[in-house]
Amino acid sequence: MADTARILTVRKEIIDRMITTSVWKEECPVPVARLSLVETPYIDFEGKEHDDGEVIVLDVLAQPIAALFTRLFAAGFPINKIRPLHEYSGNDDLSMQDNNTSCFCFRNIQGTSTVSVHSYGVALDINPLQNPYLTIEEEQGMIAAHPNGGWRYINRHNKKPGMVEEIVPLLSEHGLFEWGGRWTTPVDYQHFQTPRWLAELLAVLTTDDGRALLTAAVAQREKLSAAPSGDRVQALIDLYCRHKTEFFDKWLEYII
Image (tube, rainbow, N blue to C red; front, top):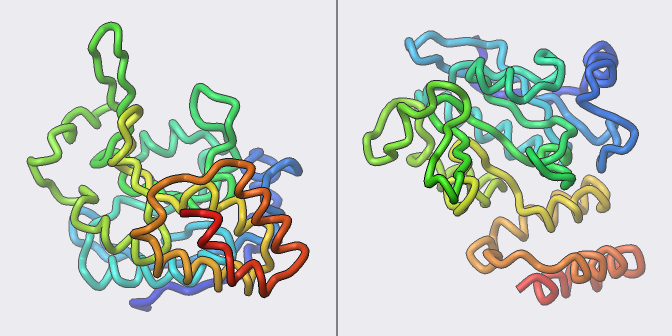
């Protein structure tokens, strides 16, 4: 069994299933040609090694994600399974109930009309059962854990295998430096992403320029906690379209 992840072209039969299941649509913010398939080994909760992990990501993030899963495998971090969302007909609830680790899926944030960062292929959900998504009913003072059974893992001080706190710095090093476990409401322990403003830029930049920007953003990630406004992001996009060199000289000034 190979002990490193591989980056592959998304096969036609997978693309066809993604389209059939609406995991990818024409209105998706990234074209299907910009997606890559990362094939990775992983270790499950019983210590068994698998070689069938598959995750679909934006091409810019493919190398960091391959390196990330290679390191998780070497460290023995347990993952229940890693399958693309078209195997769940694009239904995130089914994927969560199956405790599946996944990335790309064109969908809105639950209960909103805002496109999820998963739609850019730059968000990763890891072990949803051990790292539940928590919705908070403020008036009733109630917390609901998703998927079912996730309530067993609400106490994050009671460390259990597959919980992500120990790997948060590793995810950050590989481009996913926004963690839903730090959000106020909802709280999404399973969710890691590049910030939305960065996802919007990576969708516009060429693959090579996107890799350069992602590398620069990771190096400066401690300065990038505040999300810039939509106007600032659009100004950066306009600058990139006019003058690439000036864009790379000044992008940080627009963000912090």
